[in-house]
Image (cartoon, rainbow, N blue to C red):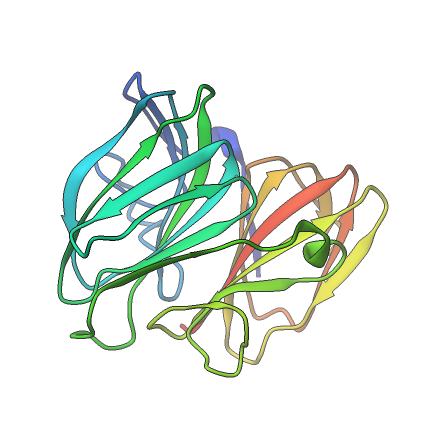
Length: 233
């Protein structure tokens, strides 16, 4: 099954300082047919105006992965962590038993992020936060595991759930393949570019829900940047 969800059909909320698109039900956007995908619960496509951001607020029992597409995001939390994550890099906050944090765009340009929430496999772990730079050339033409709940995925940021978050960049005309394990559920979003996915056209910032496919073949129609979540049901 391949279900393409065009960008124009996503949930939308414009708060002035924040222009948000929702792939799944979130806040005031509710669609009973889009409550999540496997363990994936939230995928927000956020544009944050300069010198604004999310004031301090709590989270609990959620794995929150932030992929920065443009600009940078500055994080502070109740554990004493402070960090800046810039375009192409990733931060992970495991909310665990509870954490307070803020996220601000302190840059002179709008910051664009994907914020991805995945439910943990088990509750009760200690909260944590980490960020990591991923050399851009490593994601050209092949998937790089950015965050993972599997210990064998060396170099990935750890998360407490049966899922992986992967990144891929393709040059125009380049192809790549991904073969999930049986029973896995995939959700893919284009950060930029256009491609054919098993022959079907997917446009910039659109999402694709995928299940029961033995292999997906991606062919870039333009230079394209992709983020993929591979999750247990």
